[in-house]
Image (cartoon, rainbow, N blue to C red):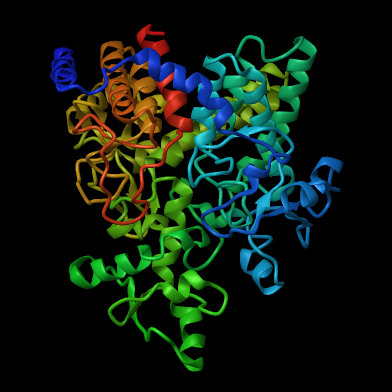
Length: 546
């Protein structure tokens, strides 16, 4: 195990305080978090909930085609100046309703209705996100906010029933993709928390309903498009085409990518196609097949630089990357443009845990035959992960490029997902724990060992991946490691809060502060922040700190 250096930041904090800067005070951080849940709460009757700075300034709220608008929602037009409309058709699965269909019908992008209050991450992320919500729910439960946590899980059930799956987030332009599948983990967090239910009957009824909805959501990952070739594993995939609409407020991202690829031709990977900045009619037709449709996407039209546009293949990988939640890194090639070519450790670890959770739920509900089916699925996935993702040579789980039959050599912190999910054997866990030195910095775990300038690479560390690693290490009895890293990351959050009174979505774990400078992509460091709040509380529980 790595040796701890508990005095390093204490010394630096003392030096900082001498200079007159605000002192680090964990109690102040906690007070901010306790109050922050209300600041980050949204509901369909709150005008602020409907705002979307990413795409439009004229809010629209959409209900499922088959769900009549509640009275309070109908009143939003008068109270908030919000247009309330129904989706043009019923949505049974991801991709049934493409965002371009709404554009062609003259309908603006908008918020998708959810019945219960929920917590948003913060800043530009003013909707309920698929994987953020797991870490938020952990924090809500730790803070005694079980009713709010339960309502968020039920919102995801509503998404599955009426929008086809757990969505990336509840906006119309996310109807083509999901996010990392944490649903059963969210359900367990609520189900197993004291005070979540009035009595045993209500608790069982809740689980019965959730079990049925989780089965439907699981089917998303069994669809042909989500299969990683013939490996028996899954990949990330988005059913949409072209650049993602939510990058409308970052008008330079795709152009920045093009300029970088032009300057680094050895890493192009066939991601560029020659094009005019203002294509004529013939070129517009060609670009629909080779790149994207400039007639329906303003983002597509602007995605041009140095005489080039990005290929259809790049956009397919770019969208898959966004379903992974890790946007952007160089984990799957330049700007992760080849994400859809990989069976990732993270996704398959999550699905293994999903299958194990469903087996557990089935046993609780007395569905013995179902439990056996889920156990067999988990067993098959574990076998496939051992075959394709475990590297005995490197002593870790690695992402697998199923198009080339080759493991990735890109060191990424998601290797610790195998501990959190329980995939690793004891011997494998020992080898993975030995890789901590690759990622551990003074302020927590960095995403990778590669400084690409992207936000999901070194030297940046994030609450969700730090928690997954910490929880996984603790599960395999590496409690000293877990407590040390929890203390390092909490210290980074405390120093950031002492500096400017905010909690952020990501941190510079090398410097141990919130000073983040990203080259391309989401260059800001958003204030809020939902998952950081939740992980801070959970790490405090693990370390025995309140």
